[in-house]
Length: 214
Length: 338
Image 1 (spheres, rainbow over the protein chains, first blue to last red):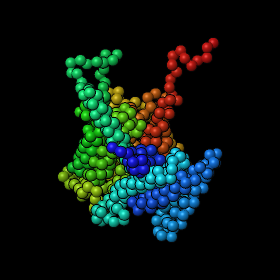
Image 2: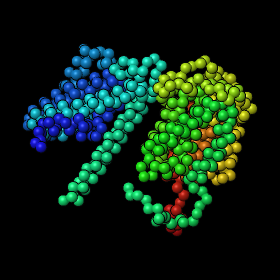
Image 3: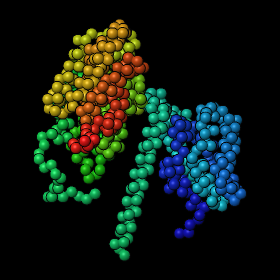
Image 4: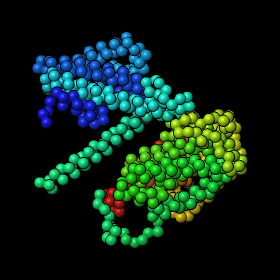
């Protein structure tokens, strides 16, 4: 099977190296703004834009950025894109912008974004860096969306504001509150780790079977 | 995991047969809770049995579901899951929808016990964790207290039968607990009602004397560390007596404090959980005093009418620290040589 490097970089962020469920990065927006699916999507799209844009710039100028001050250069590039995202959201969806509040400027401090610049974009050619950024950002959006959906369904009986269970639904108040974020994230992480251990076990068994055959 | 060999059993050193094992200790607590459980059936009719049964079912299901395949039956045999379910059920309001009670039992065992590594590894009391989850999740249903059925055994509260994920219909028949009455309406409930259980409240907390009876049985069987309930109750009595000196009108009397709410249930059955309370005698005193002080602080100065649950959970969190600082000196060590 021929491996396509850019496709590899794209796919690893979504599942195998998912930034939230596997690397456990970007926890602050993950826990803070996922109390409804729409907030989660807005946050995810903003982060997507910032990550892809800054990965593109950082990777393009990777030979020009001096090693000693690279972090500050990354931050300036990231902050530029965050400002653009901030004003765009304010202009297009002021309601969501108000709900997200301080967490949009805080995208600058999202360790997922800076981590990708430092670990990947500043070392690889532009095409791979953008692919990696798209993959990682998609993984982040998916994680935010899954957490936000679970919390909104249980906490409000709705998804994207549409009531699913009728009037008599008993809301799980805790799911809208911060503890609900921790609980849901913990349960999802638990599932991911369990899945991974099952997969490792399975691969080991396959390897053992092959060894005994040969 | 390998299959266990039934012919060869390996044990380590203390081979002396001990009278007290985990299952027997758990069974003793179940026996001790029997009078209070019976009283809850007497006061609240078949609803009590349904709520308790749902809690136990949830707890046992979680225990069974998350056990290793090889040892699945064994973790059920020590009855600790049943005990957790029963204890949780006794702290719930009688009119709670059954699906919530079931969920509470499930979460209590899953997040309170299994996730930490099973019996003996948990930091917090599973039953109280389940209750804290329910209180944070369904605050209205968890604080809707219904009056006793008044002897009609088969009268079911309509709230019990709410469909899963649906609200209970509020039937307007509600009654405040003695602590709620005192806090929000300044009405004092007579002590005789508190002692015999003629009040509204959660299933197991209404009858103070029967809870004390079970506690004495446990103490006689050496299943609980007497220092913990004694220090909790003493602290509560002394602290509320001190408050009474300032303003006897405003603060509850010591005996009211002891017999109202879930204090006896918490002090005798939950704070003494050997897993989540300190093992050293000095630690037990510190733990008990901490719980007592927190209970009165939350009840009198906090926003909630009842604080036993949070008091015990907070001190559970402090238990490893207390244990570390109250280790007795190892013989021959730790003394300056002359």
